[in-house]
Amino acid sequence: MKAVILCGGMGTRIKEVDENLPKPLLDIGGNPILLHIMKSYAAHGITDFVLCLGYKGHVVRNYFLNYRSFNRDCTISLKEGNVRFHGHDAIEDWNVTLADTGESTQTGGRIFKIRDYVGDETFHLTYGDAVSDVDIKALGKHHAQSGAIATVTAVKSVGRFGELTCRPDGIVQTFCEKPAASAGRISGGFFVLDGQRLWSYFDNNPDLVFESGPLTKLAMDSKLTAYAHDGFWQCMDTPREHELLNKLWKEKKAPWKTW
Image 1: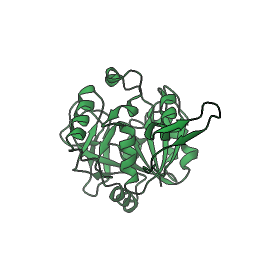
Image 2: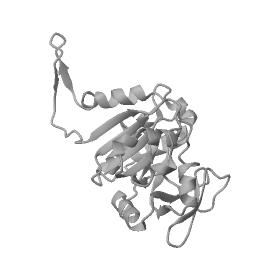
Image 3: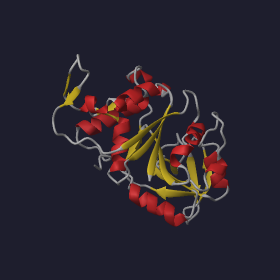
Image 4: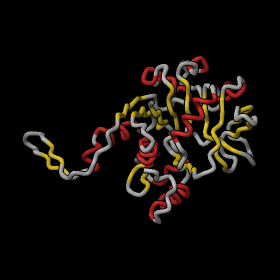
């Protein structure tokens, strides 16, 4: 099973942390938040990733193309162009597809553009700016048992994100993108999507917003289910949230570190 990660947004509210880096590469305890998210999936056996690149996508591409040189000492022969890496630290045995989905493409458009990389398979999807200790295996099992086309991880937080109302059996009745206030659960990302039935809710439109388009329609059709997660979840939209995650990591109180 693959994990698709949306990495293309501009992250305007957090630019002051480092204007040279896209948000998914902002550092948490010495590694990009994107790597933390990928390690969370890998801890549950998912090591095949598709990264939807956009704003400053070349920086993300460069990071992975030069991954070993960023994580190992190395000796370079300037004459021969050979590189010898030192040390024996394990390098992740992952496959990472770097997909250019357009600098200004919206979330739904980005997902549609990587359709060929996931095909009709069931796949995971999340955003490149939030960490959680969600049980990925349990999430996948919930999705398989639900019979729904899509599953969203529902977390408890203040009302800045897509608010959910659910039936007792977990089927989502409504999905409202970014309500003014919320007392219930919100979308925390960490989706599971059925590639066989999903694509009829999409079209090849770069302005298609996943949250207000396909997800809302899936909820209206009773094809979206929620996986309730009461553990840790935190997005990184602002400098304050970036500082919070680094503080938790430094104090060895990072609940999302499940690897």
